[in-house]
Image (cartoon, rainbow, N blue to C red; front, top):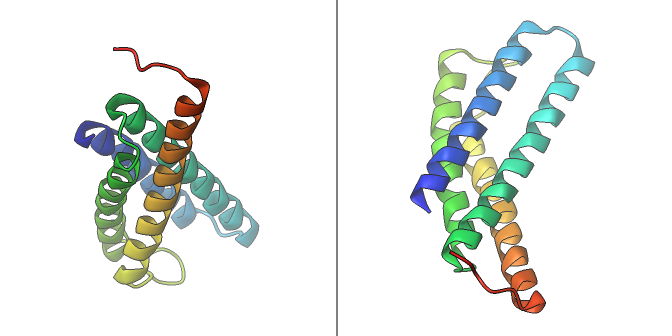
Length: 130
């Protein structure tokens, strides 16, 4: 679970830092909206993938949410540090906002996708293979 949380958390960090770099280089408000929306979609997909993969490997339904917490904390620490060193246009958000937003996304998307995967596996009668 820790390995997957670090791997997927690292991918989320790369996506978020890339978004910050692109946002600092654009001046169009429409482009900023597009960049941030694409980043949100990538974050949702990566956290959902994290929940599914962790539950598939462990067969414990709540470990998807736990992995989401770990990955989101890792992401929040790095993104908040980067935003404080190189503030985005309009200034950096408060640190609490980075942590709260990332925790909600991590818990909700990784947790729900993990539980959904667990329930679908149980209903389909599929056996876990190793």
